[in-house]
Image 1 (tube, rainbow over the protein chains, first blue to last red):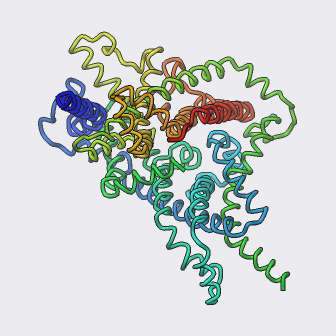
Image 2 (cartoon, rainbow over the protein chains, first blue to last red):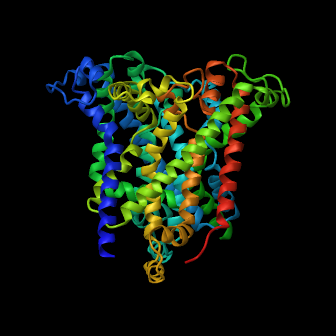
Length: 275
Length: 293
């Protein structure tokens, strides 16, 4: 019996690590080949680079206008996520505490809307905002993210606020705190764990999103990272090694954040999915 | 007094709820309703919506044989991606919840593809399918690999499925891991005392108790893979000959490249209804298998 357990355990280890290597292989190949010349990559994509050269990185950095694209992505993601968190937390708080019929109806509409995929509204969205001449504007995109992020965030906050006892808020009210102050001083600090869940999911979504910005942001100067990588690929189609450097550059920022905040991110994703 | 309280409540409502409700309505609710209206008009981006045409767009959407072909391809893609990614995810979760060294590292590794957007993932794999696997195939004389999957009309869709499984497995794994860990220890022990081992335990104890995890994961995979666009665009672009063009890309091209907004929107509504019906009935159906430990 013990021998069986040992063999079982060895087999499990080998199988797990083999799968892990297989899963990681694409990233490994991107990294090693991003240091090689195009010719070296085409003849043998598995060989290690004969010399470390950052030539491809310099080329892709310039061709993608990396600093600009990165800044655009950062501005759009940070402001959108901030707006989503603020408005949805306030709305969810109110909808829980004021048990009006209207609260229930509004919450119901939020929930029901979660099943609507972006693609079902993308055509009317573009025609409405296009007619108002609001396309090709970063603020329009931020506004849209704020709108598309509401339902899920309200849903998560709603579930959390329900379990916060009212007593603290009542005490604050007796002490003369207004509703806004009660919310910001008492309620918001208690929302911290769930704020991080919502924040992580929204950041991952907005940072990586392609379809919406591709419809809204038309001028090259406004491109976000995914858009910039996309145009770079169209322009460099067979010049593979700079493309791989471009991929590595695009992945690097989010990967760095992930390695720092691993536990929170995995927990956040899990909480978000289970609720 | 009562009047005053009411007024104050409505004031708070506008501060707390209105901003949220406003962006939500402006971006999702209004376009949704307007979209339904569009499908009954002859709207196009140049002339705007001028005439009411009844069910004309739906008739056209339903007689668009290309759309149905793409819908068929999409459904095949969804079925295979859903089954395979859940299977792989379940196995990964099983391995990573048993006694294994470097669990944290492995979990991080399997999850990594999910940090990256579909566009980037598609480009990574485009290079792998067309430049890495072909070299491998030629060197070791493996027929199936020696020409790129992406240029083959039957295999391009397989490439799309492979990448989808690679991406979603690590994500679903996290949910299944939570499911595994929520199974009470005493149930497991009771099963061991009754001499249930290995696979037997998995099928009669683990799987029935994990029905809630399956419901979530199937819902996530079905509703998301039906809407795949980014990955499709960057990996295959729908090529060769539209053999890997999924429904969303068809709708996108119909509207934004063909300029036929109303027909495109009608097809988007059809797709939405198909997805909603499948995803929701899956949940209702699976709920019947739920058991308490």
